[in-house]
Structures are given as structure tokens and as C-alpha cells.
Image (cartoon, rainbow, N blue to C red; front, side):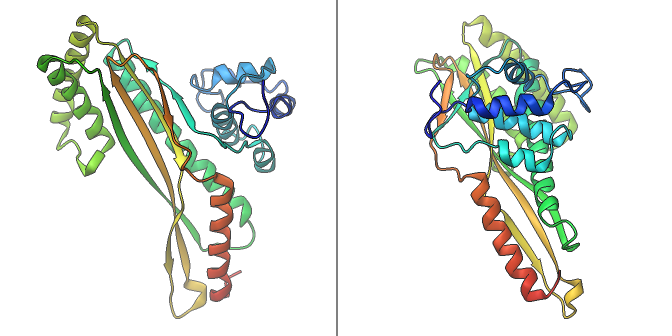
Length: 284
């Protein structure tokens, strides 16, 4: 594999380094979510164990974030292993067999991934400011989008079925601020979506989907009082979550242009801004 700066594949040296770090740790392949690597990342754990050279940077970074979140590697090790993504971000979409499968991947698993991203960011900040400041508080602020691609020739009936599924997923994501009004609406729309999905499959319309999360610039709430010891910072950890649903579209790979900032740069910018505030408040 090509390991130059523009390669989408993780340098084999980092794969070998991670394999050495995790060694023979027990429980990594356990179905226990508190200790075992998730089903989503487990294939890439096996690739690391086999020291394969075809792990993409994004999948490798997702794996080490989960290992950090589960205390399988240390913060310093995470920083050393993290790979800069210097090319467009590709998403390999999943071919869903049922609506429940779609919901499991695009909602339940996607929520777990977003929560992990938040916990990892918290750990990085807590490690950076350990023993230095107790006036830093965290809040999670994800931004989710739902992008829908349709086959060119689509019947009105199929379009109606697609709209039911899209509305159900969109309301769960709170896209455009629109949510389920109550649990009754949720149950009814979920059931309608199951039926709509089955009818689309009967009409030979394949349904693909996938998610990808990116850290975006942090937001801050600087709270000043007349007593410096009472000053504190609310740090809003923000992620942009791209979610895709393709109905009857043959292409099952989506590319996001490389406009997303590098995580390392975002953290460095945040440290500078926080340090400046803390210095001016004389909190240390």
C-alpha cells in the first residue's frame, strides 16, 4: 500500500505499533460492550492483529478512539497513533436488508459513535489540563444532517414510501429542529416505515446508508464574575454528523470534500483560546 501523505490507508508502522500496544489484552473481542470492541470496529481490530496494510485512516482513527474510550490505550499513545486525514473522506454505505437493520446502524450505532467521540474529546482536554484548572466544564453539541439520494426514474408511489422512511429518520435526528411530537407518533411512524421499507424492497429498490462524524471548531461559554475564582468555561464539544440514505442508487460510496479541519489543529486552537482566558482570569 502507498503510505505517503495523501494515502487514505494507515501507515503499516502505526498498525504494528497498535498491535504491539494491545498485545494479548483479554476481552477485546468480547460481546460485553463495556470491555469488548464494538461490532462496527471489530473487523479493523482483527486487521490490526493481522497487521494488514489496507485499513483506512478514518477506520483506524475510529478504532483507536474506542480503545481510548475503553481505557485500552493511554492518551499519549492515542496522540502518537492518530493519523491525519489529508484527502477526501469516503463513506462505504451499507446495504440494508430491513428497516430495523437501518435503524440499528443509522440511529443506535451512530448515537454510540457520537457519544464516544464526545467522551474521547473530554479525556483529551482533561488530560491536557489535569492539575491545572477545575473551572472547565463540558457540554455535547452535535449537529446532524440527513442527505437523501434518489434514483432518477422514481414512481410517485415509491417516492411516497421513501418520504415516510426519510421523515422517520429525520425526526429522530431532529433535522431542522423537527422532532417527534410524542411517543405515539414515533411508534406509528416507525411501524409505517417498516412497511414502506418492505414495499420498496419488493419493488427492487435497494436502500443504502451510512454515517460519518467529524470534530468541528469548539464553542465556548466564558462566564466571568467579579471574583476570579468563580470564573469558569463551558466548552461545547461539537461534531458534524453526516448521514446518508440512498434509494435505488447503484453507487454505494459517498465522498465528503476535504473541508473539515484536522482534529489536531482544532485542539491546538482551543488550548490557545482557553489558556488566554485563564491567564487573564488568573485561574491556574
